[in-house]
Image 1 (tube, rainbow, N blue to C red):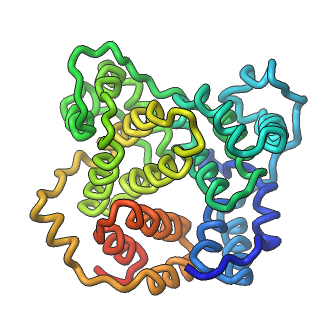
Image 2: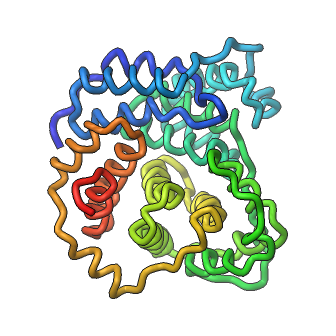
Length: 340
């Protein structure tokens, strides 16, 4: 990794844009600009990418505030996108007052089960705020999380318990209604909401008991799912686990967040098409695929106008540094078109 450039004017402008653009799609710009910065893109390339993204997506500026929120009133605005500016202002002030670490520790556990909002992109924004060391971005992320809050049901009273996250995935294949609900093309969070609302889903999602090795198992399963399908929804399983791992050290107890994220990943299995996961042998064949080095993959990602090329590449790089699996490099190279 090269020395980081300072944040340029494009990043500063991106912080003032709305969290979402029509229709209720996540604005990736602040996070992707940070990922590009981390991968060595020039400020000129970052500025060009931002200008093209805002124009092509019709990203609006943040809507005007409606009223001041405080420690006693912010909960009344949970899930209310119309209060985006008010929630952003409150949490940005709190991040400045408490510091980014203090704000995450104080507020995120209370909102943990609302992680599904805007298809987990508030988690993304928080992770990149941590990566970039940007206090204001932590406030924006908390405000984004609160404004788009979407509850994930977890019934921990389920009698059948498991330490294996793949058991939760397998349960979706036989979950009544999972094969017949109306899949929506554009909005991942509508699919998440629909499947989370199916009878039996809360018990299935709540059956997972965390063990010390569970985060690694989740990362391996998400990588296998993406390598097998190269599916847009499965991509968010890989990146989402990277984002959660990034913020975990800033929580007193990050363990309760993992079953929430895994429930969200499980809820996307019908949209992915109920894929067959690859065998260990098939994964090993994929793992042995020759792939370019990371600088070449970074260059291809930063040259792309696709926000998910950039997001996946940086997450895959960071996850490989932790878990050591070369398959991350293979799927990143494949995502940006360097190998087939």
